[in-house]
Length: 240
Ligand SMILES: Nc1ncnc2c1ncn2[C@@H]1O[C@H](COP(=O)(O)OP(=O)(O)O)[C@@H](O)[C@H]1O
Ligand SMILES: [Mg+2]
Image (cartoon, rainbow, N blue to C red; front, top):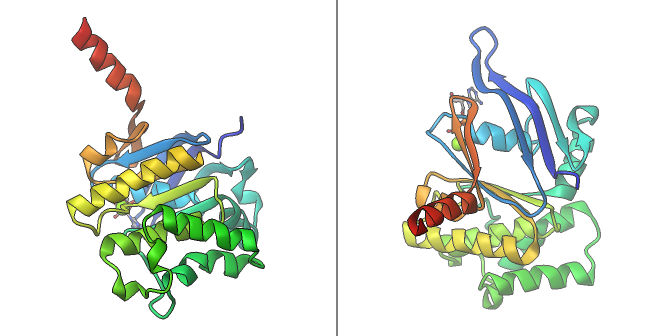
């Protein structure tokens, strides 16, 4: 099966005369339906990797294939189209539009891209129900808690039926209890919808709930492993 994303020797530098190498030749792939947590110290390149994988930014060297298309072959509008078809984004801050209600905010990516069908509306309403916002369609963002606002942002990311959700510290602005609930919700949506998730988190306890953990260090991938293998290994070690 074609990976959703494949990065080859991916590098990114910032600055002209004095270059900061935020990524130093990273190979990386995301398969359909995976749930990946990206961890690492501040400045290790997590956001840079996420932004390149999501084609929000272009690499300084190396290549990225999204859904089989090499992104350097596309101009900016082609890239935007591929991104819109394939990927949904969730950020630390929800960026909901204050004048629009919950349903309108969640529908926004659909309105921007195409005619909205009955099926689209039904899908978004079902998702809002699913994340516990069934009674809040008409509420404005300011009337919601931080956790609820982030749930709207998650539904908005799912509205276009993407193959991959990218989330940069999606629980970073929430208290630990709400952060854990939102993280749990993301893992459930991953299982129920079969969509791949890649998310950056500072919280190691949350990261352990992912299927796969990628640890960044100084612009490199220092470790990349499947969580159940580690669990299985520690279980068999206990059993043995
Ligand atoms: N827009 C930018 N301009 C200059 N340097 C940047 C920019 N974005 C990131 N960096 C640098 O690249 C490195 C990696 O940053 P980042 O990917 O944001 O790390 P993380 O998300 O792990 O904290 C850091 O040294 C950071 O200072
Ligand atoms: Mg970051």
